[in-house]
Amino acid sequence: MDIIFCNRRAVQRELEKMRQQGLVHIAGWAKAGDSYRWRPKYKMGAGEDVPAPALTGRTSTQRVKEFRAKLSADDKDFADARRRQKRRVVKRDPLTAAFFGGG
Image (tube, rainbow, N blue to C red; front, side):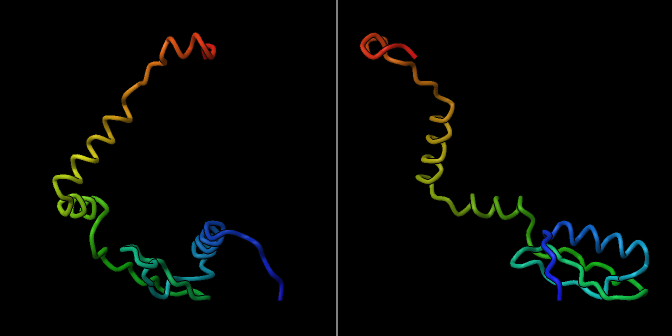
């Protein structure tokens, strides 16, 4: 048995090419880990593709809204303060620059 080194995306591209040529078909769907997405299960040979199941669960926007609803007022204030500090530009002290050189 030979070992082939390739990543998951390369395998997906090859399977899609084979599907377009009629060499494989989608025989079912499996959950993609703990996510709400589905991954196809391929089967060799020609056949009918099984339709993808409807997306169930929450979207990323819904998850973020639920997370933010659980935050306390202190957590929100802390996040706002952190956001304000990221925009702040700190000026270099001129006396320090005179002693240690401007940069």
